[in-house]
Image 1: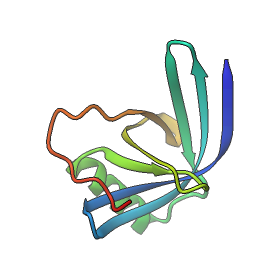
Image 2: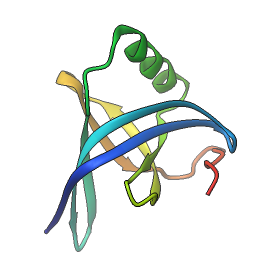
Image 3: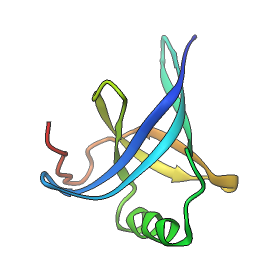
Length: 102
């Protein structure tokens, strides 16, 4: 099993030119022959205002862009777990979603 631990950023895009939220996270991605799993935590504790913004975006739709330091990205569904942990899974296009600019 391959494991990658490091920084990334969760971004919530309203359309191709408007990012409504950007949240630095620390991710642990574990890959195996059958797929991958990813857990994340916010890199720093969110202020009340930023937490409110994050919660609002999660209610609008939990599809975020996960951007790595090398600028590679993947669309992910985010599930907020207790104690601030986030579970990320590859987004499956079941509803329309506008990807961020390349």
